[in-house]
Image (cartoon, rainbow, N blue to C red; front, side, top):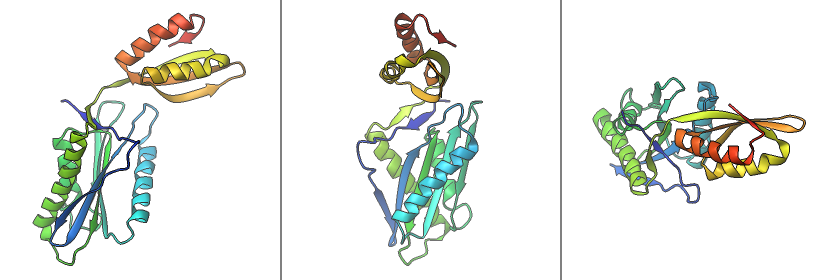
Length: 217
């Protein structure tokens, strides 16, 4: 199955799309969950809780913060979950999760904020509202080019002299690699880099030409 990820544009503020139904307002927001090989489910939950806390502080008059997430773990298994946050069971979080599944999205956290408009929508109305709010924000992300095909990531470890540290970081950035761990020794550094197989291969070729006396595994 082809998976897709959400890539946030940090240069722009997050645009809020409001879906309205009988006076209630629904605001669905997407957040990327960057999963590294050393990321645990506990740390992933802490990240989600931090996002929720910030949204609750920013939307003090909202009555519900419904959410759904999907991540691909190191064994290529999809871990997912959702919360109705006080809405009738199965009327909010699960419909959002179904949208994420249908779109093949992974490593993503979606939160839908509800401002109550005074009229109860019933279970059917809530399912439609949370589904449409989630679809709207994903469609916006698709139109902005923020939904990208997922590429599996590999990891390499390199051991270099301390004097080469900044150059290695620059080279890693050029090849779109992420530093997921670093260990500073007396005169050397061990780095763990993560990225697509293609980017790691291109990095390795250039790295070996520049630092033939360093170690890589």
